[in-house]
Image 1 (cartoon, rainbow, N blue to C red):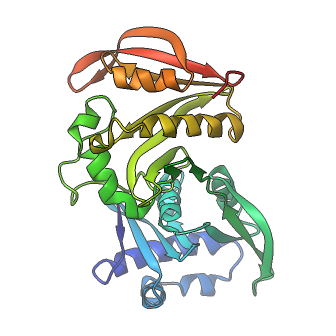
Image 2: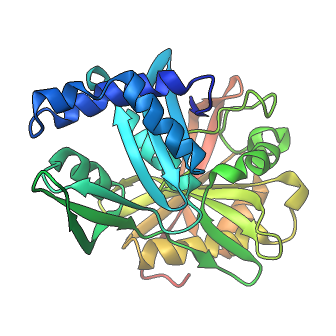
Length: 315
């Protein structure tokens, strides 16, 4: 769970920040300088960030584990407790921070921080060419992340943002009609809905109405391997029968073949979901295979029918 930092949990965030900062700077800072970064000192630092209108977030998994700050499009202070590193928590925090940024996310790292570089490059960040020196003789390097944005006549497909929580809840996670055929865990209430795993993901896109900018559905790709992937999609039931899904899938296929370089894209639907089958057929996909009793969902084993389209076929 990722939650905002405020005065009630500021010291918890500061304790994580201090422990992780000390460990990450031991190799090139003096012992006295490292040990001076206590939880009290970092609490004062984080409070100054809050006072300057930065947003801070704390990752909790039974206990506080990681912290990150976002100031407009600048991501900073990404720290995970030393004993919890290598478990995907840094990736989870970074993806969430990306979803908070209103524009192109940017960040800076010390040139000797190979571990951070690997994480950022894996999530699509690249050097901008901007550098500046810091007092210890190292350079800081700026990285930025390209964020795909696709348009159709009526829709925009882009990343899921932190501000999409209510729309995502209403149109996907709390819409029982959608969840009859789109595999997702049901959320009972907005207050208990854990949205933290969705913002900033590279494989998940919001489907938005151009006229409002509001999320009405989602589309994603998964199981990427050897130039192939599978897609899934869902749109809130109040927006059905208007052609939005077909419009979004057509544009998404163009993105996957063009920008992602996919050679084959597949999709599947539960037996009886003729609406999804028609979307696939309208987008040029053809029958691939039938898989009986492949998946257990909502208490029963479901048959899946797969459709596919190759890059050489028109989209």
